[in-house]
Amino acid sequence: MAEQNQNQQNQNIQTQNLKVKPGSKKAVWLPIFIIFTLVLLFWFLNAVGILGINTFTVFDNGPRKLLVLESSKGSGNIIHFIDKDSIDIKKIKITDGMPTIDYQLINDRAYFVNSETKTVNWVDDIGGKGKLDFTKVDDYSLVFLVSPDNNKIAWSKFKSEEDGKTESIFYVADINGKNKKQLMQKTYDNPKYVKPYQWSPENNSIYYFEDSYSTQNVVSNIICGGLSKLKLEDNSVSEVFNADMGCIYDLSLNEKYALYNLSNKEGDEQNNDLVIYNLNNQQRTTIDIDDSSTVESAIFSLNSRNIIISLVDRTPNQPEKHTIWSSDLFANKLKIAEGYAVRSWFSNNEILANKLEEKSTGLYKINLESLAKNKFSDYQYLAVEW
Image 1 (cartoon, rainbow, N blue to C red):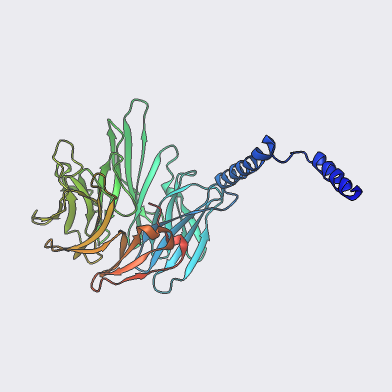
Image 2: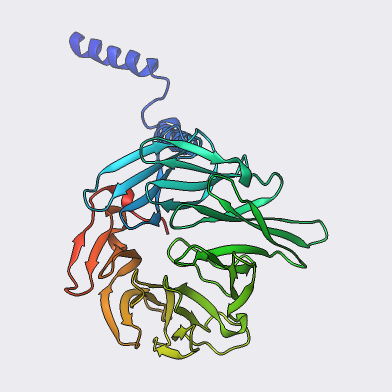
């Protein structure tokens, strides 16, 4: 009996020593408070980049390499050069905390805009780096386009004034800064600017459009406006595509075809069909698109003979349905895959695509002839940020 009383006394002493008594309201709320504090701490560390929880975006796709950007809030960016054949990876760190935009891959060099210094910078896959000081635009904004042979660069600087007007000045120069020339200067009554779109195969002409902040993404540059061609030899300008025709999805690399549709034109009935427009003879060939589907992207192959199309079906009260189709220049259409979204061409008969329900596991390479779908890589960072 004495031993039982002693045990009870010890238990009472231990209970009195507890700051939170079992069964009390404090005991119930304490775990919740701890979890809330940990979640808040996790959010804060992630926001400032301490945890290194990064996002990865496939930014450009060259003949031999992919350019993947790894971004971490507060700790700068890392550029990944990925060899397509060997999946060899080279990571190049960009200056800590430096905001960068507008990436372009030319051979083994990545060009980008440093939004702090307002200049075009570059890094290569062996750690070399530099900046094109002659592109500095001070209090303007900057967009650029390097020629495929890496010999020239075209860029436009623009800014909006207090009266709502926008000034845009368009330049070209050799990549070393020599032969810098102003191509045009325009003033618009609304937010608009001249933007380089594509170099000609001979690198002696530039396609450009007058951008009013159109819908663009890394897969497809959709232009809802006119497209013009400027010859560097004499600064002559010719209209390639009239703004009244609709929205351009892509221009073939051989300069012979444009892809457009009318779905984004104001005042017109909804029309999702794609049109292959021959720039030489103005002939139009229509690719029929189902009324319930919307074209997310449409891009010509590297040899300009085929087209790959990403569609999304948003039928009311139904889950979204994503499909990929291919077409030749005669509008012969073939379904390639369901549940995928196209990333880019890999070769003339292969594409890179994301399987949407497996978005975080990487890219698939799809062969258009056999329709075989193979994992391009198991690297997690090859997931695309849409």
